[in-house]
Length: 210
Image (tube, one colour):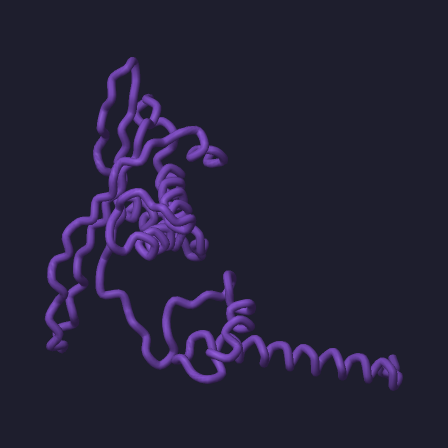
């Protein structure tokens, strides 16, 4: 069989296509580099373009040259109040973070949502409520509360012990991760639990959760 002979137009198309793929790949890698690199003139000037490439699929939560490893072990708990025959019962705390850990621990390819949805829900809430847990007035604050509430209810459900869920409450427990034996760093001081107020649960909160 004779080797295929490409015409000049075909070679030109292949060349242009290959060059486009190479340039596109280099541009994508450059955007990722600017995203994780320390702030500089280029990253600040092209911030909007870099964000358009990176978010939301390729977001990174670390910084090139200066990674900041997690130094605290945080667990998000939830408990609910249920109602049946006019009687309200407060249920025990449920460790939602432990449930997520158990779900991904022996999974060779855990999904991004299974690993990060609950953590990101809390991060979003904490960023919109830095000074307290009272009712939020701003739109982002209300959205953060709804997001966290639905993330918890997705794991608890609309019914607990056969009774309808009336309210839900969240609690964040934080424990310092001790430094390695060779480090002279002192472990962080104890962080008190952060307990949120009771949030009422209605049909809107449970819609689409199954």
